[in-house]
Image (cartoon, rainbow, N blue to C red):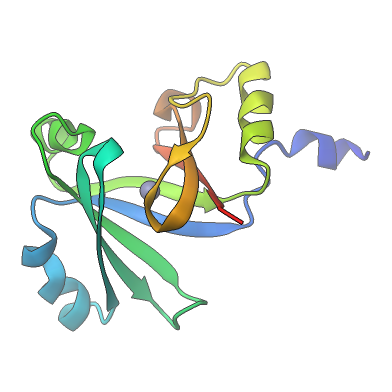
Length: 148
Ligand code: ZN
């Protein structure tokens, strides 16, 4: 294995989606659809995160970048706490990876802080895990592996 290959731990294949914290997906649809020109794909509740997620695609379906608007469904949601502290805005960037568990193990071995040491179920049938923002240069970073 080459030096480069060994040093690439995450091996991000694409930007999977960009997560944006909002108080209401419905209230923001007009901006994303009519002002920005995104295509609304629908919403999905993720009980584990206590959020309702609104999906928007920028660019051609299947080739564009997805925006995920994250609306808390409970005051206990991490998104509710984020909104309280920081207000609405950019929350995280998610990258598509393969072998997510192996990536997490390697990151942990290298001394990076993780929020999730094992992947959990995310929206759109993905297995997801978050790195700690202190270990990812101030940007909350999500790894995302589509389920086979
Ligand atoms: Zn996400």
